[in-house]
Length: 456
Image (cartoon, rainbow, N blue to C red; front, side):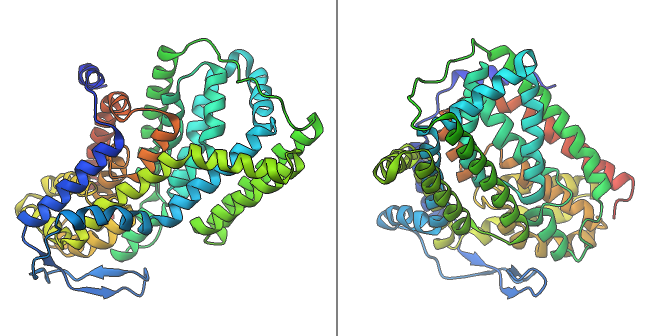
């Protein structure tokens, strides 16, 4: 494991408030639109993925479109509009769980779980990590985790773990699962389609390294949890509005909602609009079953909306960074400048170079699917020219973009989850630094191994 001295130095740093940090990134993006030349690739509709993809070799200069001071500020509401479905999902989820919590059902359920675990409560960490990692590997779970933050907060506090442990075993585990996934449709699936490779090809190779990555992440999370553990916290006193029987029904409703949520996402292709509607309906029904009445349910919903305001706004501010870069017409310029030097490198160095560039590119392009449709059409001919297997090229993209989801402040879901847990960004980086380096080293080993064994 890398030296933890870097983590200690990060712990002594104090980053600006998350909104200040994101606004600074927005301003920087606007400044770059005045410095970098505007450029663009031609694009075409891809019948396989149904997305607009770039055409390799078509990069050309376009008319400059620098973003001025007022345009920079306008990008913030535009970012909120672009991310509106996610923003309102966060609000409605927060409201729904505030209702469930006011009935006393959540506290009852967490207390029951804590008593059942007794001295085996540390086993919660690997179980929860594996659950979120599986969700990350299957459907790239990120924003959806916000729905579970209230439950996780109650659980970790009741067991004596800190809030960072809750973030690590949820958003952290999900990101690791997605980064090393053999099946994630929004990452490896789109990339394989664009590279004209069979879906699930190379899955055994990916699963082997996924297992190692999860062992590392779970061990690191448990190590932190044990070191930072305090006395279990009693849950805040609250007079349940429902009797024991009604609370059990409310808990059953919550469980049924999550079953419907998973089924809708995996089978019905639900987006955030449908998920938000589902949780809102759950909150209303839970309030009525739990004895809050119509007025009490409305009060609890408003309380929940209020509690999630910061997390919701974070997502829109993060999206505004991409809005500025796109308005300034410099995203394609950045991509072109990053990938051009790789063409002259030997195969192994080129593969590692793609990994590094994809990592850096995820800061201005904080969407793995968007990054795939932007870069795959450029990298496929480059890989063929270099003699680099397309499957290995996809590994470099997948690991670079996927692992960067753990640390980039332009990832609105990460920042929103950290805000919901009450974990400061610099504290998260201090925890993350050593294990991120270990996972990045594992990714490089996987890429080199893929070249050595002739992965196709």
